[in-house]
Structure formats: C-alpha cells, structure tokens
Amino acid sequence: MNSSTEPIAIVLVALYRYQNFPIRILHALLENIEGVEPHTLFFKNHYTNAVTPPTAKEQSLFRQKIVELQPKLVGFSVYSPYVPIARKLTNIVKENSSALVMWGGIHPTLSPESCLEQTDIVCIGEGEGALEELVLALRDGKDFQTINNLWIRQNGNLQQNPLRPLIQNLDAVPFPAYARDSFYFIGSNKLTRKDAAIVDPILATMPARGCPFSCSFCVNSLLRPLYRGLGPYNRRRSAANVIAEMKEILAIPGNQKNQIEFHDENFGTDESWLNEFEALYPEQVGLPFKVQYNPKLIKPELIARLKRCGLHRIKFGIESGADRIRNQIFKRPGKNKEILKLAHQIAHYDVKIRYDLIIDNPYDTEETLKETIDLLLKLPKPLRFNLYSLQYFPDYPLTRQAIKDNHISEQEASLEHLHQKMARNWAFVPRLFPLNPKQMMHNIIWLMVYGRTKDDAVRQAISSDGFGARLKLFGLSVKAFFWGKVQMLQRIMQKRS
Ligand code: B12
Image 1 (cartoon, rainbow, N blue to C red):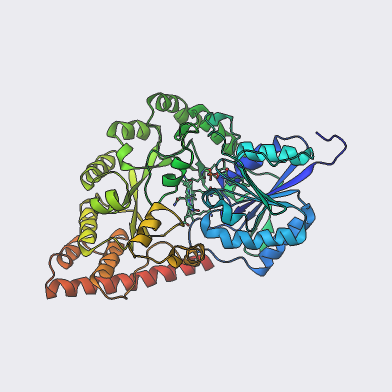
Image 2 (image 1 turned 30 degrees about the vertical axis):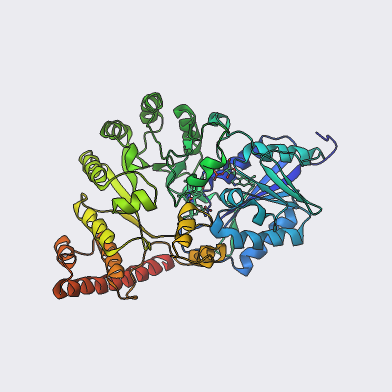
C-alpha cells in the first residue's frame, strides 16, 4: 500500500431498496481493506412496486454527498427496471467528481456492452473478488485492466476480461453490513442516517446462492449457462454461518426484529444442513420464520421438521394454474395435482401458505384461466396470494419467445418500457376494458385471492358459455373493478396517515 496517502473513499449505491443484499455485503468487504473508506448511499426505498421517480431535491442530496466525499470509485448495483435512474445518477457523479463509475448486479451481468455506454467499468457476475482487486489497485495506484469479471472502457478501448469461478465457500463472504456510520439514506426528500433495515421487523437473509430451476421468467435461466464450467451453481452457506449472521443483527441495539425471512429456493433440502439447522436455530435464534419454495422441493417430512424449528409461512410459486402454461411456457416443473396435495399437507401442519401467481399473460386462454380458477377453488382456505401481471425482462427466454410469437413488440420488451411499467404497481389490478372473457376471468381471480366473493358465485359464472353464466361473469367482473378501486383508495389513505 502507498503509505503516505490518505484512505481512498469508495461510494456504493443501492437503488430503491434499503435492505439490499449485494451492496451491504460489498460494503462489509471494503471495510476489511486497509486504506479504504467505504460509504453507502441508499437511494430511495420501495419494497417492490410503483417506483416514484427521484425528485430534484433527492438528486441534489445525492450530488451534495458525492461532492463532499469526492470518491475514487462509485459502484452502483443495478436491476433492469432502474437503469434510467442509474444513468441519471451516473451523470451526476460524472459532473461533480473525477470518480470512476462502475455498475454491477443483474442488469450489467446480462447486458454489459450497453452499460458501458454510460459507465467506465462493468462487473459481470459475482462482485466480491473483482471489487476487492479493483479497489486494491486504485489504492496502490496500479493497473486494473486485467481483473477477471470486469469489462473496462478506457480511452475508447474496451477490455473484456473472463469470468472467475463461482465462490464455492460462501462462509468466507462477509456478512452484510448493518447500522454503519458510513450509511446515508436518501428518500422522501431527506437524507437520514439511521439504518431503516434495523427497525424493519423482518430480518432477511440469504443462506444460499443459485437455484435448481431455470424458469423462463427468471434470471437463473440465463445465469446458469453464463457460469457453465465455473463450478457448481447451487451453493449453500453452513447453517452455523447463517445463524452467526442473524445473531449479529439481533444484537444491534434498537433492532425490532420479530421474524426471519430466508431467501433460499432450496432451504433445508440437504439432510446434513437440516440436521445442523435443527440443532442450532431453535436455541440460538428461535424466531418464527418464512421460506419460499418451488413445490417440487417440498416434502411433508421437511415441513414437519421445519415447523418444529419455527416455520410459520411458506411462499410457494404456482405461477399458473394450468399445467401447460406452467410447464411449457414458464418452463417450471410441477403439476396441479402435486400442488393441491402439498397445499393440503402444509395446511395440516398449520403452516400458512402465500402463493405467487402470474396472470395477464398472452399465452393464457379462457380454458387455462378456467383451470386456474378451478385450482383456486380447490386450495385450502384462506387464500393468500401475490397476484402479478406478467413482466418482460430484456433478453429473458420468455421475452424472446413472446416476441417470436408476436405477443409483444421489441419496444414492449425494452428497458424504457419496463421502467415506465415500474411507475405502476406490478400487482394485478382489475380492469373493465377490454371487455372480454379473459379479462373478466382475471378479475374473478383477483376477487378470489382477496376473499371478495363466494366460491359458488364463481362456479356459476364459469360453468358454461350460456347467457346466464356470462352475465354472472360480467357482474363479478364489475364487482372486482369496484373493489379494486376501493383497495387502491385504502392504500392511498394508509400511505397518507
Ligand atoms: C432476494 C431477491 C429479492 C429480495 C431482496 C432484493 C435485494 N435488493 O437485495 C426482494 C424480495 C425484496 C426483491 C425485490 C425485487 N426484486 Co428481486 N430478487 C431476489 C433474488 C432472488 C436474489 C437477489 C440477491 O440478493 N442475490 C444475492 C446477491 C448477493 O447476489 P447478486 O444480487 O447477484 O449480487 C452479486 C453480483 O450481481 C454482484 N453485484 C451486485 N451489485 C453489485 C454492485 C457492484 C458495484 C459490484 C462490483 C458488484 C455487484 O456482486 C454480488 C455479490 O456477488 C433475485 C434472483 C436471483 N437469483 O438473482 C431476484 C431479482 C434480482 N429480483 C428482481 C426484481 C425485478 C425485483 C423487483 C423489481 C420486483 C418488483 N416486483 O418490484 C424488486 C426490486 C427491489 C430492489 N429495488 O432492490 C429481478 C431483477 C431482474 C433484472 N433483470 O434486473 C430478479 C433477477 C428476479 C428475476 N425476475 O429474474 N428481490
């Protein structure tokens, strides 16, 4: 290290999510490097949908922080829907400092060339090794052109370095950083310092990386082939390591954590991991927890064992109630028969289920929507759902297929279109027009998942194509439209209060 120099400032930027896993991990990693001073700007927070654009005041707060910190490097973590915002903030950095700008995360991993039109450096894939090497080189005034995972644009040249192997020992990755003095939260036209993720009652953690499936609407369908030959894709931290992270968070003064959320598609499916978890979790953490699963991976014995450790809710991706759509269009395994059997088994253990379902999908027909309604009628009550409208991410297999099948145009699959859609909620909201049976069935699905109709009324409405049934379908659809508006108003009032 260059001993005569001051520590170098590095700024990381998380977009629209205070509880951002990658940025918190990378912040912790930079804290361990001598001669480096990491700062993280959390720029606005939205749990999921309905992104509000940054205000002039928020951009000005961001600018002030960049001017004050004069970083050597600013690293953004970027998902596709936020690209226009990342571009705006990148321009602010460029106009107000001499910092190099680097983008990492899912979007730059999938579209590195297009990102290099705005940035100096793009990190493809996992960032730990690449960021550490880059920051050491910047600190020591060394060349950084040949660091694996980085694509670099300098003086009109583009340097494309290969990918390094996937990190296999995830226990060696630092725990995400919380409650640091070097955190700044910009949102609601203010800059605050208190870590909002600490007062959130949910402690979220990721015990694993990778996923065994390649659903056509998910990034795993693209990441798995990208990493081919670079080591096993599905990896787990040890249970002891995950528990140590949770204990560290629970020991932070002022935390209000009362439940745990594991982001892991594979949770507990390895016998020796499960044994370790059972031995440690109830005694050392003991809070109720939620997990998410592909129904293919759940076995009743697993539920029974996790229930004894504190499992209180499973999130379970049905995605479509028609086997054909789920298996052939979404490339997701699992049949309705298995889903129904499992749902009833889980209910028997008194574990709650929240299902994910995607509608507003051009491949659905009246028939497949009827199958979905039929499945909903048979699931144990009460129903709890995340009901989404299908979204297209650039270059995903489903997006390419939908373009090929003339369901959407290239423009409708573009980043700009995706960003515009982010301004609205992605949750499905009932609509009256176009007034056709598919639309009316979407509305009925909405009524069912929000418990706003009786099963018999639904059965009658979908029983035939006769005039009486169609009239009932129309009546329920209007009802859904009405309740959709009421729900929207309630949310606005809640936000204001
Ligand atoms: C957990 C998760 C969530 C969590 C928490 C997300 C978070 N911000 O931490 C919740 C449920 C809140 C969530 C919300 C959303 N999510 Co989400 N989520 C995931 C999931 C399953 C894992 C992401 C993760 O944290 N991985 C662990 C970290 C450590 O890995 P990583 O993100 O890949 O980061 C590594 C590298 O990419 C790189 N890196 C990342 N950032 C940076 C920055 C720098 C400077 C560098 C050098 C490197 C670097 O280094 C990291 C460490 O190795 C992914 C699917 C997947 N398998 O990736 C979807 C995924 C990221 N989500 C997605 C989406 C769309 C969303 C939402 C917009 C959904 C919505 N309806 O609004 C919101 C956005 C929230 C937000 N503003 O961040 C999409 C993004 C699609 C895209 N093409 O960009 C994904 C890919 C799922 C999909 N459909 O394919 N999500």
